Image (cartoon, rainbow, N blue to C red; front, side, top):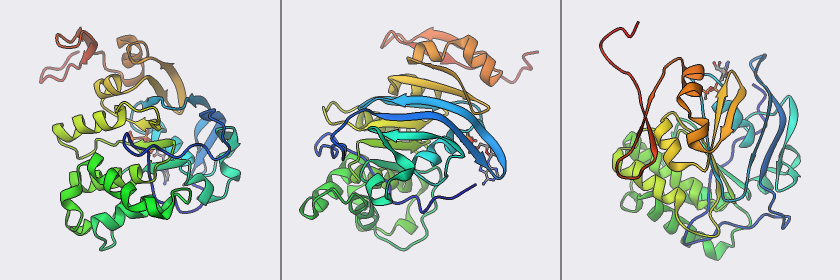
Length: 286
Ligand SMILES: Nc1ncnc2c1ncn2[C@@H]1O[C@H](COP(=O)(O)OP(=O)(O)OP(=O)(O)O)[C@@H](O)[C@H]1O
């Protein structure tokens, strides 16, 4: 893997504190154009194009090893593409200074290790400070607001080293939100989260606001993807198999083709929306 530079601290935008507007004043979204991504001498993503419109919540799903995290790493600049380009509101991401891209894109990497003996509030502040476009007098408010949205206010004065897996994940989500960027990348954001905190995260990401950040996130739970996302992109072996609204992208035929498991689609009695059931049984289905 070619490393571009430290990924930088993550961040995001909030319902109460609007995310910062695009630096160039344009609002074209995130555009991945003919992206080729090589990892350890192997092409993991041969030729990928997709868009994330401002304010959209887009899910990236697919089997283990299909390239979800690799795509996100290229977008948060932990990996330099071997071909193609990423445009952020019309500007080439990989030609920007890191301080400029940190004002536009925040990230929650997968399973990030936190090894420094920092207090929770200090970690969240790293996210707020990573965005040079946030005025200094706004930093405290960005930190408090992000901690409230991620439900970590009571942990503010605890060391991150002593937290449970789910608590640590929420702190890293708060750090991403505190960056107040117009684009937010999340790699498996519900990892380690219990049911209530998963529900809270859905509310946080879907909160009604005109300044909501656009989100691109890798997810394993297809029903969560359907509930959360405006669009779902299904990847298989680094290629886009479907890119459509959830009920279309997650059609049982597509799921079976990509995962080798056929779900049953039912209609949820409470919401009237489709819900996939998977045949996990003790019987051998063959
Ligand atoms: N550091 C590395 N060295 C060698 N191969 C790597 C490295 N990182 C990723 N890969 C390979 O790249 C491919 C894509 O990995 P990636 O992490 O993007 O998959 P993913 O879709 O996010 O998978 P998962 O659902 O398991 O998280 C996999 O085959 C993986 O083994």
